[in-house]
Amino acid sequence: MYKPRLVTKDDENTIYNLINELEDKPLSFPDFTKAFHLNLKDPSIVYYVMLDKDKIIGFISIHIQILLHHVSKIAEIQELIVAKEYQGKGIGTKLFDIALKVAQDNNCTQIEVCCNQKRQRSHEFYLKVGMENSHYKFCLPIDKDKRYV
Image (cartoon, rainbow, N blue to C red; front, side):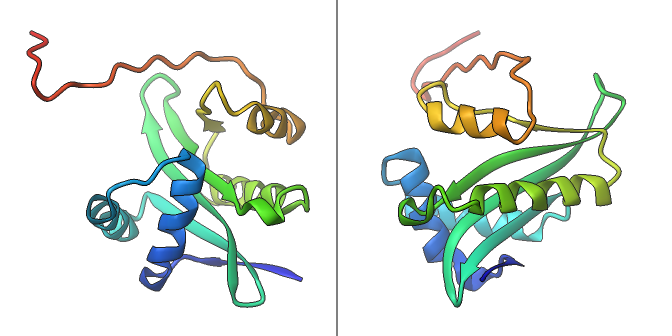
């Protein structure tokens, strides 16, 4: 029924729309395009889409890093989005399972995800798939017109 595949450069527009849905705002398309194509070339970043026939209905990005404080490889989900009309059908779990396989195939010792506090349904999803909420994430937006040091 639903089928995953690796992302290609031809998926750019659809993934852009999904990321805008995830962020609940339009992002700069030229900036998105630059990041998308750079990341496609990076072997430590893995992108998958989920298809319903030929229609992209979900997306996940997995970043593999060697972290000093883990002294091992870690897989981090940077984005996971399922189109609204397909949510609640197990597609997010299928995408998460892909991330687990990527993590195992890359000899990672842990899989992580940071999730905005406003995304309560996402928090419930990550707990349901077996993750633990054990960390805090702190952010400071950088104002290009302000001197910090």
